[in-house]
Length: 297
Image (cartoon, rainbow, N blue to C red; front, side, top):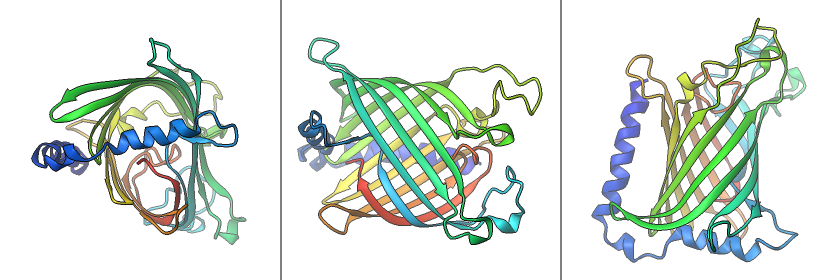
């Protein structure tokens, strides 16, 4: 959809204009550095798990177009309403690789979609994605277009839904991650390259590529933007396959707000392809409400 390509260009331009147009942002202490300092305070505590991506529970999500294609059940058997949750952590393996800089991390993210309210089919977990990764982060302080390049990362990641047969989905990637910030505004670029796999000899072959056309739907990277306003956070994720013909992409909008000292309320909207691996080639339109345990900022 050309909509996602236009949104990608508009969002990127808007974020840079915002950083350049409001000098007050430069006078605000970096929200990204605050987050990093909080992580370092607990990094050596064996009773604390360090978050990687966001950790959240959305007890209510509504998907206007459930993807029933991969399943043996009928269209009417997949509920529009389901629970969505994510658990994500990281662990530093080696610190100070390059003279007091550079940390090698292991991380794991679990993203699940649960048909908890669907008693007709025994409330199954419709989809669970497992995402272990190994990555190296290097701190930086380059100035780019009025922003500061705080961190550059490089990693390798495997993502799979742990299924077999026709429901199996997986891919392996190497990626770069480049973080820039200005006060409470954070911008992240995450380009990736898919590691090629052998073709299947037949659709039922357990070996080989389960989803050879996944790059046509998820493209070659993502752009993130986050803005922290007092205790609220606004987030935007955009990706696109950058094809003029058969253009496809996705956008996710996040809003988090405090409801207690420990928890935040969370509103998440997703539109496009690749919300989960089983839905990589099916467009999803979902709104979710719930609570967030750990935020980006």
